[in-house]
Image (cartoon, rainbow, N blue to C red; front, top):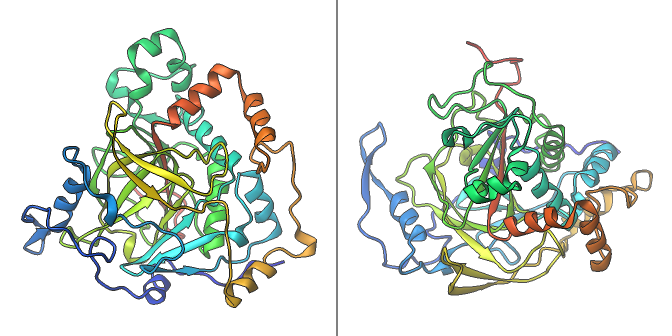
Length: 423
């Protein structure tokens, strides 16, 4: 079976596919709780900073903000539209299973009318797949061959990984587990110059490249190359300030963002801070893709939201979101209806993709030895988890992710005609 030709051009098609219209706070009436907007210099004169006040609103601790305006992307979703997945090859389908993804024909992919080019895939990972990626982000990526923020704390990784150090008695006493904030892979982003260089260039993990290759093809971006990644580690009180990702020479390529662990309130606006941002929930397993007009839009994370559900352990269909203080006392509760495990595709057009995406010659068989294999039975999954590592190790991992969020941001750096960065 060949690859479908339903390619979405990252620079053109998304602008044409999705009808952009102005809505505030995801299309709902804005509450009168914000202070007058500040001003900023956009380079084209002084403009109102519509982003700053929204960021401060959701970041606020006392009183906690009303999260009722935060968009919950799911059916029914009036603020956007669901788009069908592209068919992919047999090899890509096999790769998808190996890296912890459910059948691509069942993915729920949404675009947002207010932000042309912004795509959100609702958790396409198996429960076991999520857990494996969480483990990889904690135990493998923070190592000596990659750059981390730990250097600013005088911590050098050599023979041991960050996770190994955190498990030592000295690491536990020093609070090392809370000090990791970011890791860079592939082309290492220089936070001072905001540039990439060949002098700061490592290897991209093969598993991460394979993950991005499958996801990009399901969306129709067949030429995407994963060349740089930033792994962010959010604690309960962590935030990400408003910014744009413009360091890559090839900004026409999509930017992929994978979320694991606790949920986040994500803000996305426009090319300047004069555009009022929309607030969107990103939950564990969700994949956000910034393409076309949204690729260079201002965005931020003002708040981490603790959740009761643990989809990296079992595939839960619904969960209760609770807004918590740093001391974990519940001060506000929000109930969010999520159906993460049921991927219904009902329209005739979408059923064509569902039926034709996996033919008889290309059936992907379940492999019990595959560490990223989907588990449908809780007791069987429990055995898999217990067998992955010693009890103290796996319980430490589960404890970490129960209170933190991990975000993998992957982007293409080089233009298609380039094989290296120019000096």
